Length: 256
Ligand code: NAP
Image (cartoon, rainbow, N blue to C red):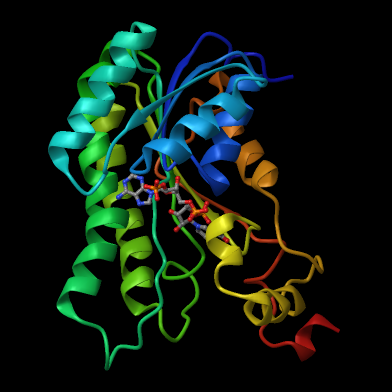
């Protein structure tokens, strides 16, 4: 049904692992030319080699917390694929720190990566997205912050809610250039980063999800693919929750 991704140039920040790697694989499998971005060169080159079986995927080293680095990866993607049509702002970190123990540096690291990184990459990509004439931005936010809270993740929640505040105003500015920007709010998705939180965390989360399981990176990627299609051209400034129903029940008992 959706046939409009083929031939597009796509940039996925944090595309070397987890959800971002899933996004990159899904876009490549649909015939897009993808550039994935991460800080770790070895991991990035390994991911690009693995994803080559899905389609056209290249790695560019970059740090989204740096505006200069964002400009450099956008320029590299444009040069490599002759333009840029779709940007997935997905790079993110989620270290835990109780409010009373959180240092200013820990707060800054999370805001710089998750929130400022989203701003920097979108701003850097704007000229290319305007030239595209059918630009799409897809932000990976979270249920944590915009909808729910979690002890130990106040800085993370603020960064993820902040992405939505950014998105809504950006949507108005970008609309003039026919660029849409939307956010996906994943619940608990099995990734390297989530697995690092430990088996107890994963078990507790599973019990809180009406569909009875954690989500897969492919399930997040399907939502992103939809938002990138021509068919989704009239959707902007919106959020799409992909959480197995986790944010629906009022309590565990409410799940029946
Ligand atoms: P992950 O497995 O830890 O992967 C994170 C990716 O981001 C890696 O490719 C990492 O590569 C990259 N990254 C981190 N900091 C970066 C920086 N400063 N510059 C460039 N790249 C950077 O994480 P994930 O679970 O897939 O999460 C991806 C996104 O989904 C995040 O924004 C997260 O908040 C969001 N999310 C995840 C879940 C979940 O359940 N997994 C739920 C809700 C939202 P390097 O380390 O090499 O830089």
